Image 1 (tube, rainbow, N blue to C red):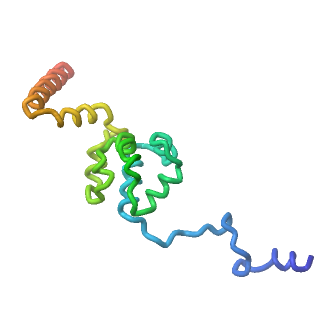
Image 2 (image 1 turned 45 degrees about the vertical axis):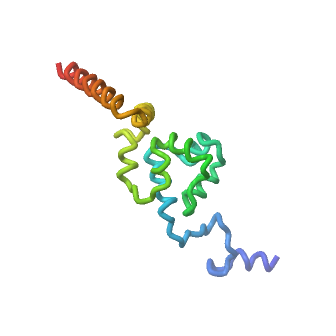
Image 3 (image 1 turned 120 degrees about the vertical axis):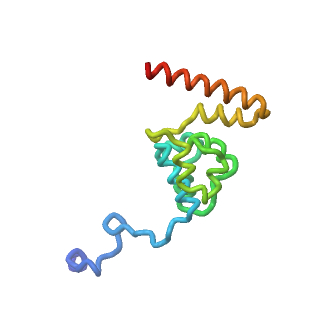
Length: 150
């Protein structure tokens, strides 16, 4: 009994380490690859858990990729890019920075989604067909803006 009472009345320096009382702070800096992935995820308005469910991996994998220099596995990249509203290359290129994440989101923070997918498909068409589509979309947007102002 005496040992127990000594232990409980010991000064904070002499108490044993308990994670609930004294959590450890990470002394390592986060690698750019992980920081970039976390920024893209937050810009898309997703939690680690939500992103993990979408790409069918455990949440711990998302946390690992956000803390490490290793990019996500190649089988996960297409679904992750789709969920985040960016291209696969945007997930792998660290220097793309915040410009790509801002470009890939609307002002409300949600991924552009359908429009981006369609224009990605259009970009793979021959140039002549691309010009026809751009002309049609430009005319449609102009007409919409005119009707809105009236």
